[in-house]
Image (cartoon, rainbow, N blue to C red; front, top):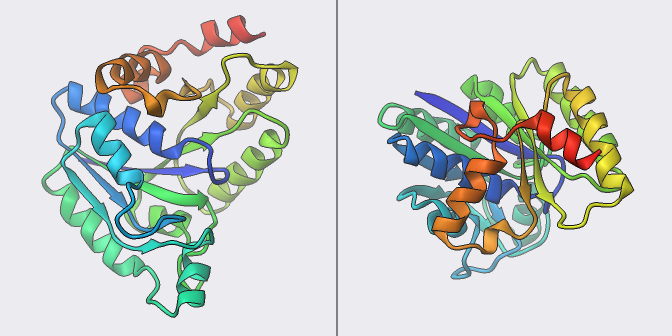
Length: 237
C-alpha cells in the first residue's frame, strides 16, 4: 500500500489533472485508489471541486474533501477571515492511514504550493507528507519563473528529508515558446532525474476514454505510463 502526496509549485499548475492521471492509470492496473483533498479553496458550497474532476476523469469512488473555503486564500487564511475551523492535520493523517489499509494507492492533493499554510501553527502539505512518510509528486509550470519556483520547492523537500516521487509538467502548452522549451532541461537538472511526465494543457476537459490515453502517454513508467522523457526532451529542444 502506498501514499503519494501531489503537491505543486504554485496554484493553477495542474495538480488535480495530474492526480487524476495517476489515479486512472492505477485503476487500469486493477489497483484500488482513494483520493483525499484536505482543503478546497476558491469555491462556494455546491460547486464542483477538484475531487469532482478526479471522479469524472478517473472514475475513483473513494474520495474525501475535508474542508471547503470560498475565499481565494490559503486554507489557514480563509479559515481566519471567515471565523471557521482550520483543517485538522491530525484528522487528515488518521484518515489517510485508515484508507491505506484498504487501498493500494492513496493520493493526497495539496492546495496551492508545497508550503501553503493549513492552520495557525503553520502546518503545510509538506508536514503532512512527512507525518505519513509519503512520497511527493511535484507538479510544475514551464513558463517564466517556473525554474525558480521548482528550485525552491525541491529545496524545501530536501530540507525536510522528503522523498521526491518525480517532477511532472502539469500544463504543457500546445505551442511552447523558447522559455518553455528551455526550461525543460533546467527542470530536469534541478530534480537530478528525467521528467516523470508532461500532460497537455486542457487535458482536464477531455472525456474519460481520451483522458486515459493522454494520461498513459503523459506519465512515465514509475507512474504507470509510457512517457519517454528522452524523446520528449529531443522533441522540445
